[in-house]
Image (cartoon, rainbow, N blue to C red; front, side):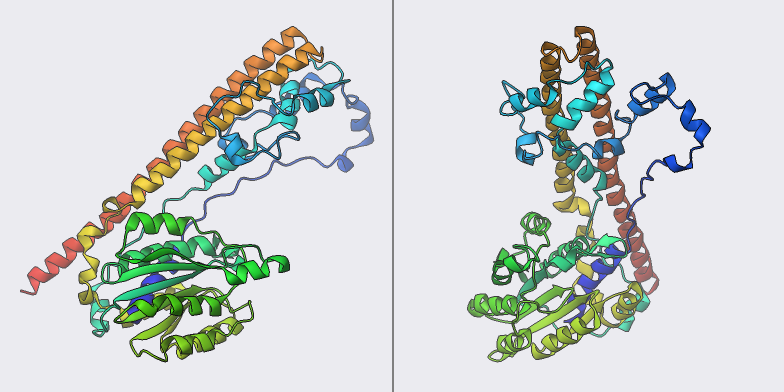
Length: 474
């Protein structure tokens, strides 16, 4: 059975070693304390900046790159608006409904603003749409993730020994406690674990019925949420034949949040599995020990005590020494195996000892391409939907800005000429933002295509080499 656990380890360690992308450096600013007395005397008085200084200050408020777009924050009067509100595709009759009086109160008594960029700066501070920044950040961080097939070399095949048959039923228990929000090798543990479970589900699902449970995903890590977090274990994929679309959507909807009810999760698995016949194995992916006061060792013993065809396997993901000690005892009590997912080197060594390609014909390489699954259209849809929501959010923000300009003109905070120029600036900025979104969308869609092609090339190269080797051997 270790070979099935190693499939999870493969995805965990390969994902944890992936690139995390570059960082944007913050602009360097001069320390005022380093200015000389002569420079301070020559500097323009406040609100009387020179033309060069004014141009520099104003330029900082305009969007010229996608990174600028990710910094778009909610305004003082719009910070309570939800993401759903801010991406509504229907235009409001009054864009400032509910906040117009507050906006007017904020602007009353203001000195006349004589520059369109200063006007836009005020509008952004009060009426900005935070959904723009949040969605832009989501789009910017998107990285295509596909289950990379195992392509063992002949020497690795020979190192294995014929293993036992896969179980009739496989129950996967995924830890979504708050510790999974931490990073390993520059990538969030939860994201690495999701990729691993997606890969493993597809693999074990070729021979077994599969269910997926999640725990630690409710509440928070705070004491007041402990009861909720420790008592909530959900079966998000019911036991049955593997369905890639359903499995993919369920896994990607999981968020790490709270405590770690490991014992309760095993107990829940025992209760729900009483109806199943034949071999059944629980696969637990966890990065830590029990934190809800339960006894996972006793629950693992209870799980297997009445049926010799049952076992509990544990995959300890980047765990500390104390947690590993407990998780090992849980696996031992559950008549299963404990395997540590720490380094790629450990994985490579273990694979040579446990992976037996003949057991499942290397999981049918002709079906290993991401093109044959649900992940490609799902991720393409995610990119297109995010870009579309960004467009809706921009439209709502622009409508608010233009209504704000109208009010400022009526209140004589700006002249009619400045109002006209501000609207032109809003429109020109909108065109810049839309172009940046389109470019980023195409970049991410291309990244998906490139990753699929890379995996296909590896599969095709491996299949060709194996076919040639078979011909040479007779």
